[in-house]
Length: 459
Image (cartoon, rainbow, N blue to C red; front, side):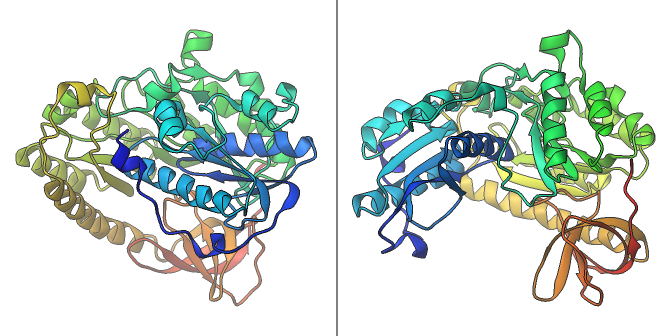
């Protein structure tokens, strides 16, 4: 990582300024990046709380003795956010607002030596898999027998369940395998134990996450076991929704498709990051899938599971992407009308295959223009698909209440990344409960609705 990138200091957020003081035995864990990082932070928070520490999460207040920052090191924007957050709390430490500052996670896994040299004010850096060492540094006792227990930081009715670490894919643009190593599935028994713990804590919706759900079980059991895992979690009382994130198209686990009919708790929703549709770009990306294979997979999924919501992501401006490739991608998106689509621009990450083999040959302004154009197309598609739901009655879980609405989601919407249902406050609704909601209106991303009745849970 370059000196210039590490040296960018962000402006301190208001709550960091001039706080001062501190309560003993209080630790603030700040999480950056993806939901997989969030799970790690929740495990750490629980380990520390079992040792008598008072713990808080993502607090901008500086009344903690110790701050631990769980960083992201995926792409340039994420790295910059991590560095700026470190520098913000370095400022708080220099003013005496906090006593100790530690950094863990993907950024320090990837750039530990550089960070130690360029931001020495941090008391110690730990990698992504150094939780035991970090707990020891904090003079706490690491308890591996409770590693499945977590201090839930999401709204209490949903939680993420990380089913594996690492990745065996070698996508040219991706730095994650270099930070997380090879794919390592968690045992099914351990995951069921963790899911039962979450259910007892009041979790109604479990989101299965991993870098690659499609590969689950192959390393442990010699074959894919995602379908079996879904079935076992579905047997747990209290769990009402099971949601799948990050199913890679290569060697897609086709045996999960019948479960959308036979397992009522399985949300009709999959997140399948396709990244591109042009054979030229897919080859440069080392995705090991063709346009034709992708088309066949999407057709099969839609035939087997009518009405399924498909979320995907596209990577814009990968080395070698021509104007013709981008035009093909636009046509592909218009043809398939994905329910949910995100797009991000290529970041030339050191240590990746793409960094070593390709020039970053698509100008930044072209990347940005293409991203905006693709998302403009998607906004029109999203508006049309949302309008088609008007008049339907859908099962909705309530996430929160704001000044004007109760805010919830259907099974077709994942928290934080998808749309929401805004429900009139004529009748009081409870957070974490399911209701039947009639959809009365829509816009590009959100739905509007009114209460029909409460919903009886699946047992």
